[in-house]
Image 1 (cartoon, rainbow, N blue to C red):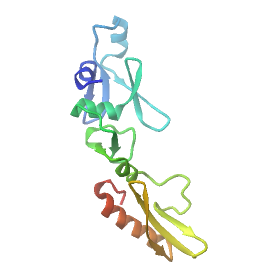
Image 2 (tube, rainbow, N blue to C red):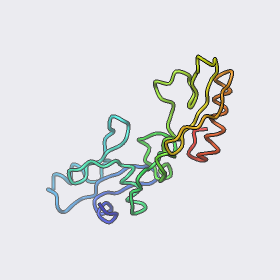
Image 3 (cartoon, rainbow, N blue to C red):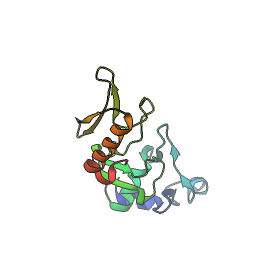
Image 4 (tube, helix red, strand yellow):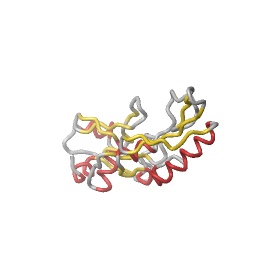
Length: 165
């Protein structure tokens, strides 16, 4: 997959994040009347837009990066956390660790705060953070709000623009 090929078959609007197929000579006329010029892509079970190109599914944010920059980075982050928002201003190349720093609170989180959990044996709230696969204890606190504030401060220091502060 190359930038030239993608640009020859798709049009991408970087301000809306929408892809449309272009009319193609190598397709039957009915394909062009059905698909050319119309928005393409469907949302998968994780909320990402996928587009079928030559019988293979591609994530639209990866195609957007290829279309605009000419390469697909290993990891691409949606700055606003919305996996279906493929505006180019919302996409940024990143490391896996930076991408994970920008995740939302997990559904199974019981404390209501990212990076915070309760230690029953100490009767304290622990704040911790991970970077490059290693956990770091930030501290132990009397209430979850203090632990959450400590987590946010450390996340902003470690991850900068990628932190959800």
